[in-house]
Image 1 (tube, rainbow, N blue to C red):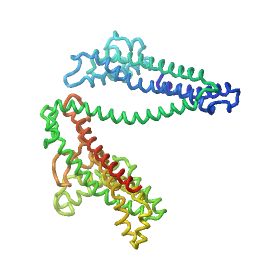
Image 2: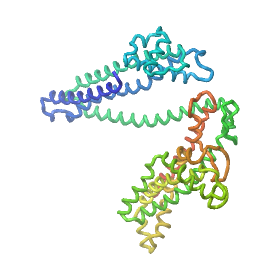
Image 3: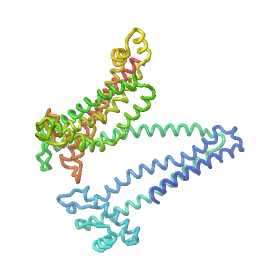
Image 4: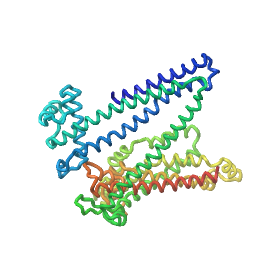
Amino acid sequence: MPTFWLVVFLFALAAFGYIAGRARALHSAGGNARDLHSLPAYYGYNVSLTALVPALLVLAIWLLAQPLLVETQVSRMIPTDAIPENSTLGLVMSDVRRVAEGLDIAVEQNALTETEAGSIRTEFTDLRGRLGELGVALGSDVRPEVLKAAQRYRVINSTGHLLMTLVVGALALGGLAFSYLRTNKDFRARNVVERGVLALLVLAASLAILTTIGIVLSMFFETINFFKLHSWTDFFFGGTWAPNFRGDSELSILPLLWGTLYISFIALLVAVPVGLFAAVYLSEYAGSHVRAIAKPLLEILAGIPTIVYGLFALLTVGPALVSIFGRGSEGLLGVEWMAGATSVLTAGLVMGIMLIPFVSSLSDDIINAVPQAMRDGSLGLGATKSETVKQVVLPAALPGIVGAVLLAASRAIGETMIVVMGAGAIAKFSLNPLESMTTITTRIVSQLTGDTDFASPETLVAFALGITLFVLTLGLNILALYIVRKYREQYE
């Protein structure tokens, strides 16, 4: 049974369980709902959740674990001499999966029988020709060993899927029967359902935390593998970024970190003043009608995809800066300070525009949280509106505003698409904002693009860059939350 229809079956069974459980509870009370311990709906929820939730959990775990187990078992069938010199086991397993999918297509279209597709004795040339007639190209580099592994992959995967269907279906039917049989008028259904819902809420919160821990651990272990192959002193204290995949790479994070911080600094120079002034206007001066229109329009900027900002930087902002600072007499200033459209200033300006709604929205909330009594006291002492804003409201909201700026800074440090399209790809130290530079996120994308070998330092360095960036942004977020909490304790 396909997974989709298995899920449909589980939800249909849960709906049936709700109706049956409710009806059984009412029947045990002689049709009088007042004799029930709980409301009739709780008895239905108990049967429904008991049939649905355990089965769905097992299904989710099975779908996650089966591919890993199948890959591990099938990869042992690939002999070392079957892996080309310019390839890896991961690439060979990709071919195995592709050929297995081709066999599935052939069976679905009746070009092969189930026995032929699963038999390791099928002639290699015969299968190649028959799959080629269906438009499934195996490629000239596919060896008989790979085809044999693909056949085994398909058999194990089919068997696992069948077992999954049987186990999940049996668990759902067993849960339905168990909860249905113990349903009676004295059963404390409400207590059981509430405990079950509480367990689901705890599970959801735990999954979010465990996912974060899993991401960090995956990067951490790969980073350890990187430092086994490359010197940590060169990574943290070297001055050159020059990966060449020949074993003599210089992989220092410092040029990338400089470009990241430089672009983020320019972005904050744009976003903080504009966003803060917009927040002050919206919270202190704008009328209700203006605020109802201006605030949503301002926050639309936060919903624009970053790739659109990248295109805006590449096609509009970059050429505009070149017309001012670049190409000799063609520039308005008559000097060639900017050779191309990609530069630190291009990416910084556009990223600053993207960050304006982050700064303005957070600052607006912080300013509105300042007690109105402080404004009334200042105005009552004879201060003007502007003096009240400058000397009372902003100082009171300053810790929260600093926290908002730090959160915007962490958002800027982690930005990728604007930098890829607007800043260039050169890792170097320079104070000139009109030159091209690159950032940590851009290099992570570059190192993991294409056919990668996760046994080389030039690829594993992406994980070291990623965990360093994670620690940097985590530190900024913790500092921002600390400042905001301190502000709340002082003014609430």
